[in-house]
Amino acid sequence: MGTYALRRVIQMIPLLLVISLLIFALTALQPGDPVDQLVFGNSNITPEDIARLKAAYGLDQPWITRYFFWLKQALTGNFGFSQDFGVPALDFVFQSRLPNTLLLTVPALVISTLIAVPLGIFSAVRQYSALDYVLTFGAFLAVSAPVFWVGALALYFFAVYLPGATGGALSLPPGGLGSPDLPADASAWAVFADKLKYLLLPMMILMLREIAVTLRFMRANMLETLTQDYVRTARAKGLADRRVLYKHALRNAVTPIVTLLGLSIPGLFGGAVITETVFSWPGMGKAILDALVSKDFNVVMVCLMMLAVLTVVFQLLTDLAYAIVDPRIRYA
Image (cartoon, rainbow, N blue to C red):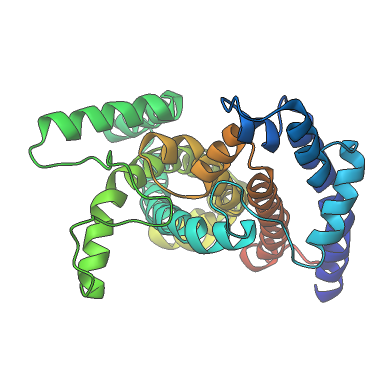
């Protein structure tokens, strides 16, 4: 397994280089650049000033030349500065936005998995029961409903009809969370409780879709596994239903769920763009959208490259987890 993992890690290097080239090209070829955004609406800046600024920042060079300059700097750990916040782009993402995204996505993924897997198993075992119909119909609704629409409905309901509920609709500062009236010497528990009121609603919206997707996959996999010959043989031997279900069927049915979860983790980081925007949550998803609008390309590159790294790393971890979940799989 060690040789297989090492080979996959080596293969990641050219893959990430190609991804970085594509991301840089798509970012650089969109209309406008950071200087255009900087001088927008400023009548005091002359065309000569604009040309001088573009030459100073290398924006007058072809995008492929700028890419190799960016790559040379990025390999040394220098990802440039954020023009919007005046700090290194890497520090801005990892210190200001990534913790907020982790605070939102990690509990959402863990809780939704703990809820969806048992519900999927129960729905498969009690196929065509009343609860099975309710769970299946609810999962279809949750998967089909657009996230922005569900988020807007949730904001309207909790902010208008529930007294005292903010619904997470407050505009939050870019650098962090917290009410402005929170004392500076507040305890860690008070700070956490203050963040929690902003966290609950966007986390519930993320969980709703994750529960629906995981439940459907778990139900379908379990139904297929329960019809296999080895399951019928185990039952014919007189084994208890619980032992047949959890020892023989579940371990094989859960393998595709490992794939789903492995791809859901990086997907949550980037897929939370809409949720974070609707609820004004200062995470990575909102940072990507804001940076694209304001042409803050350095922040865009840091965020998207981090998502690319997470995707290839979790694909490798998912493949390695197969050998743990399914003893039939070996990487020799």
